Each structure stands twice: as structure tokens, then as C-alpha cells.
Image (cartoon, rainbow, N blue to C red; front, top):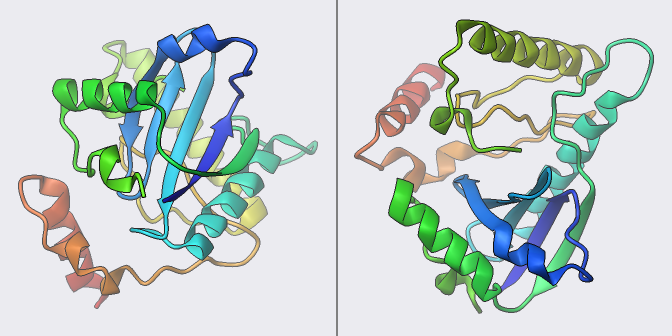
Amino acid sequence: MKIVVILIGVIPRSQRCRVKSVIKIGEGTFSEVFACRQENVAIKLFPIEGSKNAMEVISDVIASREVTRLTRGTLDKTENFAQLKRVSLLHGKLPAYLIKAWEHFRRLKGSENDHPSKHQNSTGPLEFQMPSCPVARLSIFTQTALALAVAERRLRFEHRDLHWGNLLIDYVNKPLFLDLSKDQELFSGDGDPQFEIYRRMRQEVG
């Protein structure tokens, strides 16, 4: 199995001790997100040739690159999107320390994703760390709204999956389209209100 690794920050080979501080902080339908406790580093893993094909991953990479560029310029800029540092294509098994971090996350918070063994051929999500301070909550809302406004103005951006576990957007100069209506598993899940929202969304948009 080939895996695309999106690095927001880099873990140098010369400091192997850092692998002991890697933890899993979240997951998406097609990805896993890890972080390093000692520094502001996130690692996003996309297994490809499985749930997601190479072209879909490339679209995500292009979108991440474009929102990274929103930090540049004198007008209409924002630093509230994660900054893309490096993208790598790897082939082979996941290292044991990442699998250990994945299993620890599942014990604490559960997981909707398959165990990494099936693919062997910033802080955490807001939903897990909602601050109690009302000023901090207002700050999060304001920064998110302003970041989206900048992206909308410069990239004709529209977010289609904005919830408290997913505040990032993937977009480029032209629309990227993935026909989610063809993914029947997305609409057949149960045990979480979000699955019902997907079904209602499909009814509304036809």
C-alpha cells in the first residue's frame, strides 16, 4: 500500500527520540492525523489505491498548497490555515510507533477507520478541546470566519463540510469536485448524528 504523507512541519531523522512523542490527534473519512508533543508539527496520512485514489489525493495536496499561499500578500491574507511544509509518497508498512499511537487514540476516543494493519500492503480537533472561556470561544469563531472570508475572496472558496472537528478547507483556483452521492457507505452509517445529517443533506440537494 502506498501512502501520501502531508507534513505540516518536519521530524528530522537526526532526532529519532521524537518518535516517542508522536500521538494521533484526529482522523477523517480517508486519513489519519498525528502530531509531535514537543513542537508544532502535524502529519497527515492518506492511504491511496484503497479508499482514495491518487488523483483525489493530488487534489487535496493542491488545495492545501493554495490555502498555504493565503499567508502572502498585503491584502486579503490569513494565517489561520495549517501551513503545508512538505508532501512525500511512501511505500511499505507504517512504523510501529504510529500504529501504537493509533491504537492509543482508539482506546481513548474510538475510531471509525480501519486498523492501520489493513493498509500494510496543531493540538487536537476542536470537538475534543472546546475551551470553557467565552472569550476564547468567540476568538475561535472570529478567526475561523475571517479565514474563510479571505479564502472566499481570493480563491472563490466555499466550504462544504464545516464542523467543529474539521475547520480546514481544500480548494484551488478552479473547483474540485468529488461526487459524494456515489459513495453509498457515506449515507448508510449509523450510531452518530452526523450520518443522519449526510442523508438529510442528500435529500435537500437532490
